[in-house]
Length: 375
Image 1 (cartoon, rainbow, N blue to C red):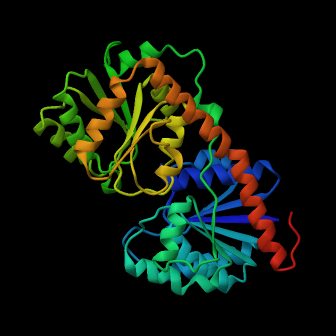
Image 2: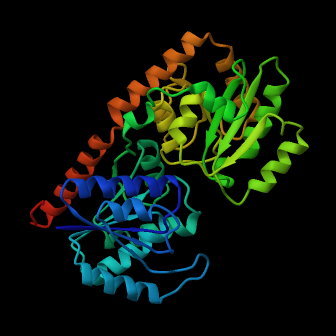
């Protein structure tokens, strides 16, 4: 029995990470799994192939619509004959519904991974094609409520399945924390803030830099390290220079050792303008780090204000700076207690095994409605 996944592209982003985790976990549970990327894949190819997952691409190009892609996808789906097609991200959701319906795929599951995916025209496109699929998922209750209110998905045709992670991967044993901090240029008596994510508009790093400039006017000794790549790198570097904070802020580029960076950090900060259910916040909590984050998407479902971190309004550098200063001012024991509370929260609600169980239960339900056998 085959499950096919269709995704807009394979890069180091949150939606892609979740799809790869789900695909690999289902493969480990004896499902036959195939992944189709609309764009040529830029990441995760080895992770998928090493797991025995078939990988195909439609070789589309960003910003250049190609009607032939529908024909190609229909042909591929007819060749693979999946029982279930699960799609991630807007373009894949739309194309997957059309091609999956034309190819006669029995079950089509769309997955919306972000509360903001491009405006009212895209909202309308999802609404008008909803009938072609069986169910839509999203990763937070807050996002689901907004999608129903915006008439993206009819009420009763959306399910919440959160993101998942292997919590123990972020508990690094035997790490020489100071060695990592020295590599990052951070002294023992400096507070290390870590931010992780693509350097793009959604993450609102200008807001974080403004907050860090305000923080620098306090008596707190702090450094900020940002892991990620993206089109705004040079503009952000120049902003840090113009703000005279470049001595304290370093952009690390793409890093594959996020668990090590988290272990070395004192706190994690997220400054996004919009989100789904951010993997990076879950990962920071799994590493037992206290979090300061903007109140967007599913963040309030992760960060319990005053218990495992602080939540602030988006696009408010003063509020973000004040929360960061407050975190830095706490006794170390209180910060550690916050971090442990965060780890307990993700262990209880977001373990990958539990999340995959929810996906399998959804698949079983959808198949049962069609009179088909699960696995």
